[in-house]
Length: 244
Image (cartoon, rainbow, N blue to C red; front, side, top):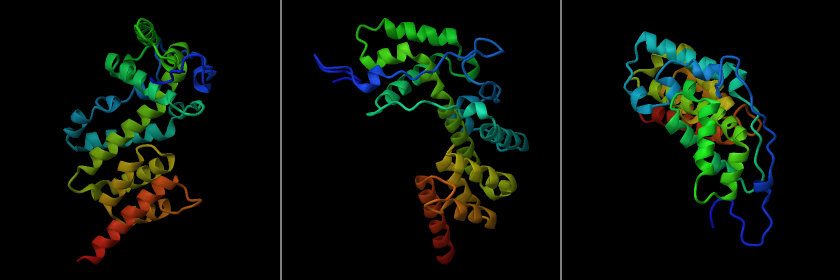
């Protein structure tokens, strides 16, 4: 049975009937869907295109750019909207992701994503020969689906920045600014896994202290999963220290 497909003669499930109550917003700068902060990020960071990002040279200019990108992702409240949580069983999130993929394929940069483009995709979905109930839900409530894109893009972009920083032969050379940003991103759960990995790669006393703070659970600043990752990284650093 397909996503969100109620059986014959059954009542629609809670997700199919759910009203996320997300109204269409308007941007003062035009027909844009995504916040200015995402649209104004420099290329290629704004696309999370890892193949291009991985090849960027780690020049002073690019490092300063990476620092600015992380700072914007952390500090602009428009990038952390309140996305309504679909009711159980949560299959709607998978259909949102399917729609996000379609958005990314047709409008690859945040500045390309417009309401007119989103409405074209909605019409394309409506023209499908078979549309399951949860796909129809996205068509009816497309604003909720695209609102959910914003924190996901924020996470993807932070993820690519930290992965790029960790490729440096000596990531400790930018510890003075990267450690603090990485710790904040783990707490905010933005690009958390590569941020923890970067702290481990830096390995300075400041990075270890940050990992120690993040590893506290329960009741620490990070989620349980991120605290576990920090704890594991600290353990690996301790093992390296005792193996010499």
